[in-house]
Length: 500
Image 1 (tube, helix red, strand yellow):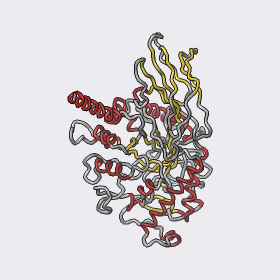
Image 2: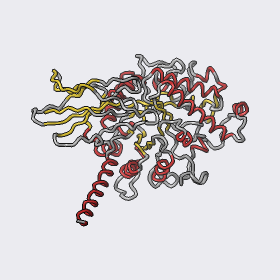
Image 3: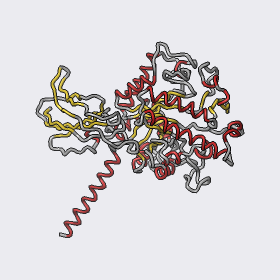
Image 4: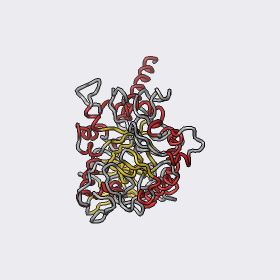
């Protein structure tokens, strides 16, 4: 009897290990993002029709690769890839700053519609402080520098809002409020440009703003960090005051602090967010001023100054008060050999690490075109293994954890378009409770209903119907439909037995 009990205990333990590893291998919830940038000039010289076609082609490929969030650059240098009353059309769209696209269209609105069609989130990516890149020779008369040059600092051939002026923060908050109010974005996203990356020997000349607003600070570094902290806090408040379901995320440089600067820093030796860019990411995370964090851990495993293995473990340990995703560099990943198996690149090793750390809830690919182009077989691996099954977005319980009500009136109907499963949107008291997406699961006749297994997800859709794959009407299935609200809380299931 004791032997039998021991055997059962060992068997259950093994099954438990298998279950955990299966959930790590195919998580039901995971952020799977990709950045689409404009500053690389990929859209310049394109007609409206060509750019739309290019974006649709990219989105189709990314959807097929399991990507569920697009981070789209809409403000690179106090300009706009959307209709703005405050800032000029971007030269990265039309070739000349201030010149509107012809025929007229709105890239941000276009991307929102196309992403939502495909079950993807759209995060509007802005650069808050940079106001002119080196390649911009002429500024539009609508550009904020032309109106208020006193708010800007020229540094290393570029222009920046001086973060020391309250007017700079107020202006940036106004721009973000305008985007959030007028567009159905799922998030506002900022990347790694806070104070500019330092160029040795060049001074960021904020003497005037420091003299006016630096009282109470014994050194300029602390004051600069304070300036960025206040902007982050005010942006978070601005966004949620407009629409509480819109998230605010940042994507900082991959090193917070080196251990030589701070005993709690990482065992690295590189540029630091805290000391060099004046960005105190951990304060923002721990104070709840950001809703997600995607550090750009672009180096390889084994890098001498910034080892990927060291950094992902550091962020997983220190920055989990808000959802943590990892910024992955596709080109570097496929160009570097696995240290244990040099005949392979590092993709497998990086994903194994990422999914072994419970506080890491996904990743974002830099950059989208590298995935689309299948560099080093990266997209193939996403399709065949890492994104083999669909994934729901992670939830944001610190914003809202109330699930929508279950769908109503699930029924199957023959139509001229085929056999269709219909359901009715659940009733909602307000926008936070409203269902905006639905998850459709399918189970074989004798299978137990396990909604934690993503291999049973056949659709994540904004439609209230799903076309059924009818064969001969002899095979029994159970279809289960759940509702998702704007923050991806999932309702209780509603089911329907069918013969297909």
